[in-house]
Image (cartoon, rainbow, N blue to C red; front, side, top):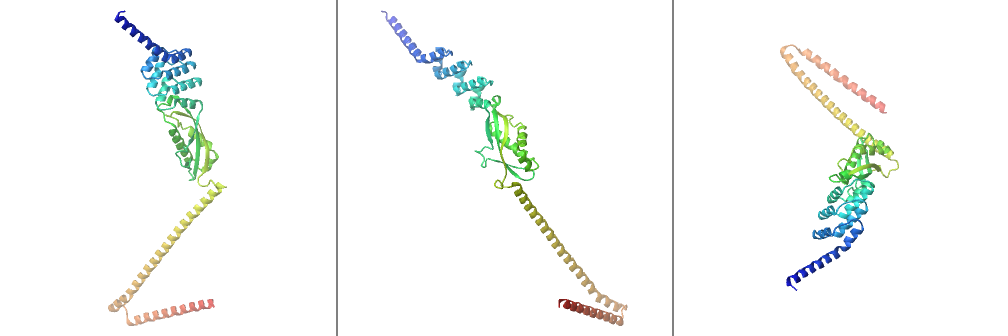
Length: 343
């Protein structure tokens, strides 16, 4: 036999053996796809292996889609796998959305998955709304919102927000933390605009309605279904049997202290005014003494000018002595009367 012919037969045999080995390697996956109606060519399986894509994973994903009545070729599945996405999770989300009559394309589902969101959980949340607490117990120490009404009474409030995932705004939309923050801000604002805390305690549903009508889910990946006030109480008096009576008592005590402070201020002003009047009396007395000191000077001047004689001077002294004697007698009489009264 010719040597070239022998070489050709050897190469042909090696190719046959390689083809058989490759066929046997992908036989199970290929038969599974064929029998499931999700046919995948042998060349596609070999190409997946060369591109370092798991053929069994892609075939299983395509089989699920075909059995669910969806038609997605292998190329988009491979591209999502190579991009680092979770192919099976995306496929399950597509199937769940189709069964729930939710419009969801493979491109959007892949984008949500690559954005780091659980697309299957998002579809489940769209079907069955999710309840989140406001405020978040993990980040809030007391687990209650602290709000103050116009009458100055502090209220502790806890709300529960029911949300549904919005597939259209899930990519690029704000998440749960934003919803919690907005709802908390709305509740605090609504209570702060209430005239009295009693209105809030009587109709907590008005607070939730006002917050719900504010459009807090704008630019978020969720749609707010409802906001419910789960718990509301007056701060600091949770153990009191009669909250109203206790608050009225505290307010009366505060009013009493305020009135006492005002009375003390008025008394201090009166004392200051009295001291001022005494100072004025002393000032007037000093002026009288000063004026009396001018009398001898005026008399001396009158003597020098001849306007006052010696007899006039003695007559003035006699009048002054009589006046002093009468004042002394009058003073003694008042003292005796006081003694008699005491006896």
